[in-house]
Image 1 (spheres, rainbow, N blue to C red):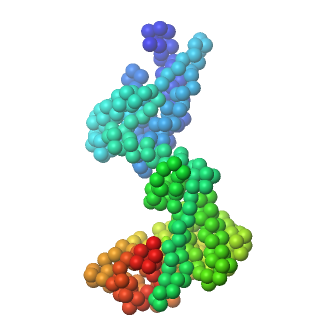
Image 2 (image 1 turned 30 degrees about the vertical axis):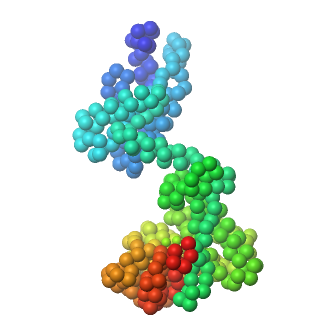
Image 3 (image 1 turned 135 degrees about the vertical axis):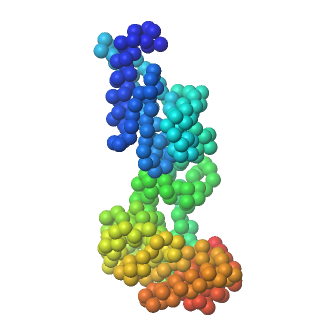
Amino acid sequence: VINDSLGHPVGDELLVSISRRLQHRIRTGDTFARLGGDEFVVVMEALREPTDAASLAASLAEQLAEPFTTAEGAILYVSVSIGISLFPDNGQDAASLIRNADAAMYHAKEGGRGTYRFYTTSLTDAVNLRLELDTRLRGALEREEFILQYQAKYDPNGRITGAEALVRWQPSDRAMVPPNQFIPVAEDTGLIIPLGEWVLREACREARRWLDEGLGRLTVAVNVSNVQFRSRHLVDRVREILGETRLPPELLEIEITESAIMEPVQDAVLHLDGLRSLGVQLALDDFGTGYSSLAALKRLPLQVLKVDQSFVRGLPEDKSDEQIVRTIVTMAQNLGLTTTAEGVETPAQLSLLRSIGCNAFQGYLMAR
Ligand code: MG
Ligand code: MG
């Protein structure tokens, strides 16, 4: 339309302006090219996940939302439709990848201008869901949609010794979102930092309430995500929150995952020493599922190993699971650590774990 009404030179000028604008949004190292006519191609290398392509597509579309002014002062509006194909799922070579991106682009056009589509509808749906989750999650903290649930922990005599705080997201207008769906998104967007602080504060407040109500010296265990663990402010925050809630530090147990302590170990030692100096207990969560180096384990100021439920699930029938649990418990004892078994669901599991020498138990058998 522009070529026909304003002439080819204006059309060419517009194409140049468009490429300049889009160029700013392309990541360094990616390829941006004009295929012909009014079609452009972006090759994103080393894509972490499909969502990254969707984010770029959305940002490119946003770049073109503002009108263009030509040298002669004409104001031109353009819109964009974007199709995305992924290597290797949607094609093994350039030709098939471009062809499938093209097909996806026609779907995008049908869906209304200014949108993007993946080659497969299911991927488009999944990515849209994820991006929608992202948007909703950003406001969820202010809307007070998070809640904590507590799973009690028991000693071998069946007495409650404390509980693990588990965060849940309950949007006001729909079903509860499971943590494995929203925690990764919160980690990606950085929301995990304020969310993590909220969880810590709420859990400490609650444990203080248990103490005040005379329920005994119950510990509260709080899961700290890797992102939160690596943040410089964690130690200061924990100190502040303990002060604010007047919870005795030894009643707070911080659970970190194996991946948090991996890289680099010196940093993990530093952070853990900082936390430990506050007097809180430190537990290594989901032990045995990651890549804990035994050398690292020895250097870390931990008090508790949590035996992952994937080993508990097979008990008592699976003999290798039993051997693994025995080994973990023996090793923990030799290192001066206690063990907590999680995911205990049957009386047979409980009695076996008790005979092996686990110190604490949690799971649906005793308390949901
Ligand atoms: Mg945990
Ligand atoms: Mg766990």
